[in-house]
Every structure is written in C-alpha cells, then in structure tokens.
Length: 323
Image (cartoon, rainbow, N blue to C red; front, top):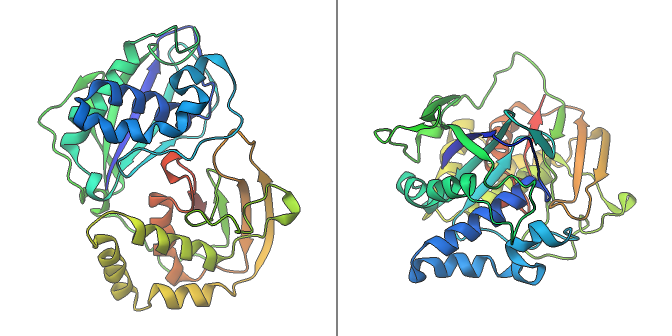
C-alpha cells in the first residue's frame, strides 16, 4: 500500500460538494483519467464508469441530486478517504483527502503519471456543461501532498512544488508503525468515522441490508475482525495479503480465526447507530462500547482502520477509531 495525503486549497469565494465528497472525487477524477488515457489503457476506466452512465455521468454534478450511490469503483484497488468536514468551503480553506493505492496498484509511478495529472486538470478545468458554477472543480490548488512512512508524513508536493526525486515504496507505510499499544490501558469503545456496511460481496440477505433502525443488528467484535480477514484475503496482492496475516499471527501467537471466535462473545454494553442518508454509501454510522477489547485484537483493529472493511471501501467507508 501507498498512502497519499492531499491538501487542496480553495481559490474561489465559495465551493460546494453536491455529492458525498468521495463519490464526487471518484466520479470526476475517474472521468478525467478515462478521457486522458490512450484508448487501450482507457478501456478499464470506461468500464468502471458504466454504473454512473444511467445517472448522467459527470453531468450528475449539475443536473440532479443523487438518490442512491452506484456500485462503482476504480479499476485499481484504491480508497478515497475524505477527512470528515463539511460540504461548503470558502476561499483559502483546506480540503484534506487521503488516497490509498493497494495491492498490485500500489505503484508510485502510476500515481505520478496518471492520477496526479488528473488532479491537476481537475484543479484548473471548469466545464460548465457538466458542473455547477459553485462546484469544486477548477477552483482549487494542490497545496501539499504527503506520503505516509509509518506514523509520519513525508512531503511529495510542498507549497505547490513537486519533488520529482522523491520515491515512494509500497512498504514504507508500515515502517516503524506501532500496532500494539501495550497493556498500559484498556480499550472499550469503537467509533465509526465513516459509514459502514459489513455485507460481503453481493449478499443481499445480510441483516445489514435494511436501513430500518430496528432491523440492524449491532456488529460484534468478531464480525469486525471477520470483515478485516475478508478484506485482506480479497486484495490483489499475489498472496501477500495472506502472508501479511501469517506474519501478524506469528507475532501475536494467536491465529485470526481463533481470535474471531473468541471475540464474537465479547458483550456490547452500549451502542448508538444512525442510518445514513440514501444518497451516501454505507448504511450505518455511530459508536459502540464493548465490555472489553482483548489486547490480542488491537493490532488487527489498527490495520482494519487503515485498510477499511466491508462494502464501499473505495469511497472511504468502513474505518473507525478505538479508544
């Protein structure tokens, strides 16, 4: 994985996100990439944009509100995580978005050659045929871009200047990353930072399908760890996702499957969840408290917050904080 933290500075009096921000970033940048690449390279991106076509494609940003988010993603394993904020920004304000490229898609050259030029074009191009006069596109500067190395962020773009000598590797995100906080304190609470939907694949019989508040069971600690296991096993890493789990399990001395079984019985003592609006990906957001969170589960939960779990991870769904 390579993690990019992008800081955009608004250069117009006022801009609005007319869709949930990760949806808007995915649609706009995906469209620009598909239109910029040679036809043979653009084909996977055009296919990935197919779910948007019945909704009007990029003109959706101008013509009508979104009723339901499409089942769309990019043809590369990626997460667009917009730091929680607001929908309207004034001149000089910052918009923070983290892009995570994972698996075989964790390629710094691909970011420099394909994604960054698309962001540059989006920052300066105003297409009034397909966007509103107050949309973000064409009205921001790429002020800073940082790349994660463990707990630190290293500058790739600083004050709008790109450092072409910087090389990011797909392993540096984990360098010095402390996953186990040690036995100094007990953890009980899990707060979902973005909406979650712990269905796997296209299983429409999941109890998480309905947005009826009463029909949504509270995910157990075992459910969350099982979703993390599914996420790791699904990444296109040539088996490296499973290898990473093997290494983590070896260090912990406990297999993830054993931990899932043990944690499924940890009682949830408090919970408060709210259904998300229908135009937003994910189904629920809120907070839950457990009788205790076992120490052996903490490294897996720390990784789950980075990789995101459940459905719609491309739009940033399925990450949380533990305290």
